[in-house]
Image 1 (cartoon, one colour):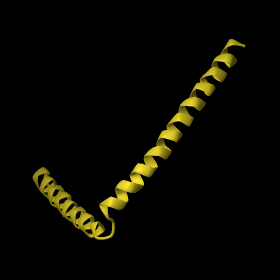
Image 2 (tube, one colour):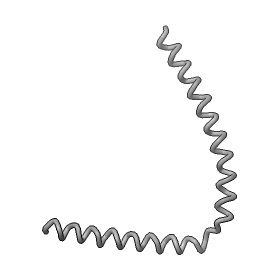
Image 3 (spheres, helix red, strand yellow):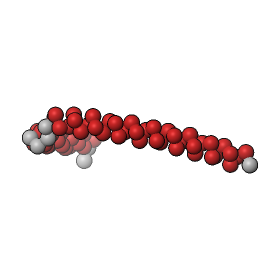
Image 4 (cartoon, helix red, strand yellow):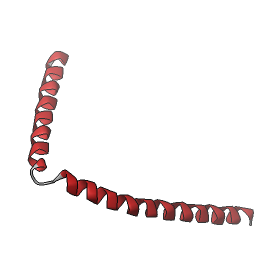
Amino acid sequence: MSEAWAIGLMTLVLGWVAVELRGIRGELGKYVRRDDCTNDMCRHAGEIRNLWGESRKHGERIARLETDKEEK
């Protein structure tokens, strides 16, 4: 198979995938309301901020432990 055929075939396959993904997105839009998503994401944002703070706190604690270990 020549390079031109391979490029053409890949273009066709990628185009088909893009069309299918667009169709899936349209179908899912029937089941998920944007208001629900917005409310859920706002609620998750608070949880993510809490997790971020916890991970920073524990990261600093781990860094101190590693520093103490290296000094010994």
